[in-house]
Length: 220
Image 1 (tube, helix red, strand yellow):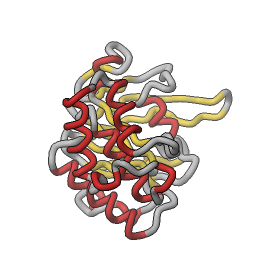
Image 2 (cartoon, rainbow, N blue to C red):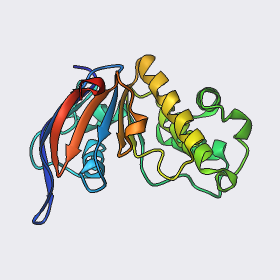
Image 3 (cartoon, helix red, strand yellow):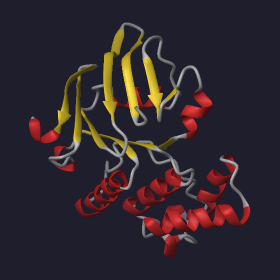
Image 4 (tube, rainbow, N blue to C red):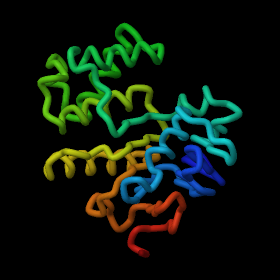
């Protein structure tokens, strides 16, 4: 199993249970929608997958690497787009990506080449010199996805990535990430919007802290 595997994960904020015995698998090169209403536990799960929180029990494997036993290797295979925007608005798109590249040990011509490639894939290369503040919501999201792809992750997590975007921007980003899965990236896409899910997508239904169903979307 080289995609993403979550086994027996539970988490609570004091007496409030956010996740209870959550388990599911996302095979390699699969688009998996994590569907659930606000408050279902999606963001808590993402915080655990990125090790912002530590799970008191259970196991998480990213591209075959155990997150608890070998966090450095596990996280090195992970790309993440959080729900809240994280670009520095006073930097240009390229400066944002160069800073992120440096954090991953990429610099010089290698970093520039990788940045150009990722921006071009998201149709953002021509906007690389613009400050993030000047971009609309859809283009900011594209820049964040390009940034997440810089380290060439095997697993890409996106937490409600289309919140606040118009219909055209939502469709463009959803289409692009589906294409990434077809090209070999394992994708976990958290959403509460059913129109972002395609019939052949893998689907995990999260409600009131528990996985209620999992399988191909067309089977529901």
